[in-house]
Length: 276
Ligand code: HPA
Image 1 (tube, protein in one colour):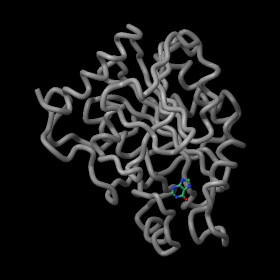
Image 2 (cartoon, protein in one colour; image 1 turned 180 degrees about the vertical axis):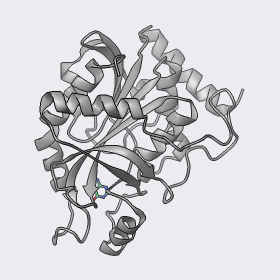
Image 3 (tube, rainbow, N blue to C red; image 1 turned 135 degrees about the vertical axis):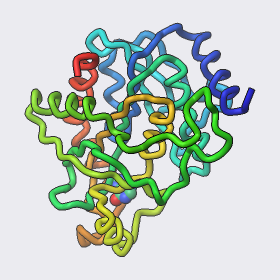
Image 4 (spheres, rainbow, N blue to C red; image 1 turned 30 degrees about the horizontal axis):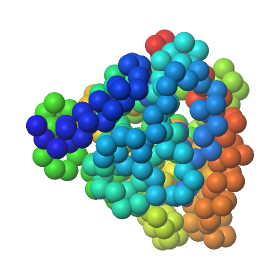
């Protein structure tokens, strides 16, 4: 058996020693969404550190665990914390959690993140539904021997963000009276923020928001045939657009400020699961 499949299986076995919970969908909580975990009816929790070979965030104080539980009766797996390529993990390691979630049963995936606003109208505090992504500036997580058991060698990426899940997100936002913008997400490696010149380039290429996660996870999920949805919270104007230096503190502060609304949206979206 290949090492990727072995790694997935070792993690699944470790989770199965704690819980037999079978999630239908999974959600990765980005910045500002940590509090979402408190709302779900938790059946089991599994710290990432207890899983063999599982990537653990190098950022001090970051909760890293799976929560398994129910959102209005819908069985979901929640990732509280994720790792990023800039931490020094390989792309294969970065997407291992997504592969484990699929192996645990999840067929749908909601990816959330904080991002810088590049496109017009994407001001700090906006929520943006991903219509597509540009991942050309990061290595593909699918590089390496292909696991046919996971998916094909040359997977199609013409609709990474599933149309019916996008409709579900829009319906959830409408129900809550929350404005949900739409746009294209561009992933960079980070950890540095971009230069104003890079942001001009990304705008020319069609990016509406820029961030350091998500597209690679979405690709790994699509490889396995999962249906994917993505939502960004715009925490700042991208470099050169706001006339001031960017800081992690500002990103965190805005993510926390919008977190309540973002949580409501994610909750309603998950609660509507199965009726898209
Ligand atoms: N650039 C990259 N990643 C980010 C940004 C940004 O401006 N804001 C939040 N995450």
